[in-house]
Image 1 (spheres, rainbow, N blue to C red):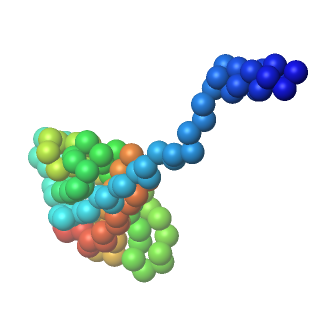
Image 2 (image 1 turned 45 degrees about the horizontal axis):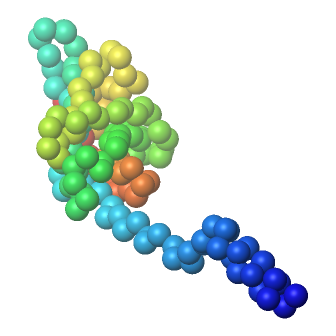
Length: 137
């Protein structure tokens, strides 16, 4: 009887699944780093309007493909109010850029009271933000 119980207990252990207590290694992520940022506007003869540009170099120790998005948010430096926001697009390597015809924005190229926050995020949500004063006309 004891032998049958021992055999039954051993077979129960052999037929079950094994569970390991090891947890996966934590993901190590380096945050993106904005090494260059610029913004401003200039008159354009083709559009007969001003053109706003936003330019940034974003480095990441995990590689350029780790950077998932870069944005430019424009604030009124006098009131602190958000005025407009723009997505930047990868230009290759670490450079992100976008330009916008002035009439498609809420911005005035003759107003010198803006501050632009360039922000970058990676696929894990780590971020970096740099503020620049845009060149206006």
